[in-house]
Image 1 (tube, one colour):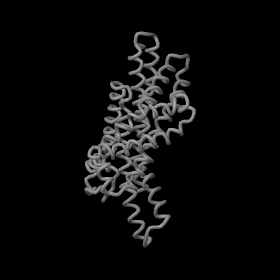
Image 2: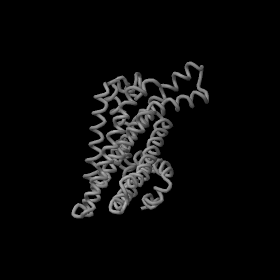
Image 3: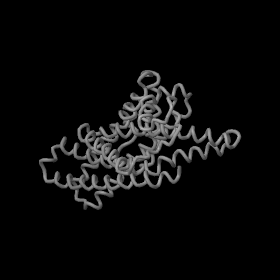
Length: 288
């Protein structure tokens, strides 16, 4: 009751950047509770608890946006209105990712390996060159062909749509899971970069911390932010349809407008995902 009462959809849309701090708070509390109560399963429980904390706000936000579909907005203005909500999603995701990354780096390695056990296993499946401690020994950027990357991202996007449609805010769990995996990946790259930079500099300095942090964030943000934004848009569209069906709007004239609006959102998400795949294959490698 406390966490879900901290902010309303209207306030969050007016001040979307505040969601960065709420996302960080949700993630921090989730990690603490998971570690104390569900230590052995903390890598999954912390994702669930982060999702539960954000669920009331996100559901009310989607409901609030679905109501806009029934109002007299042109499609262009309606997309502008939705952009306010999408910014809330994005800043929430960034806050969760950054907090998970910080926790991964500051806690002792033996504890982080438990807190992020499932995430490290996922990274090892993606990149077998990682060792069991989670330290990257090779490139963590996929060297697969553009087609493989794009269709793999499409698969995730479809899951976002289905989860959001079936569970209302189901896509929020997928986004938080991706945030935790990306956080572990950022942490691995930071450690690898920091150790290499420290070795060259003859020891750890303030600049080695700064350059390592910048490098690890840049490595994933170039293609990661538009990719996640595409998932957010897709999950958002699925959520709007879900709310419309729950409210029985499918039996009204407004449902046709809702379908048209969500179709545009899905088209936009596919375009952004296509561009993100291009960035991942042809741009990101330039900086690594």
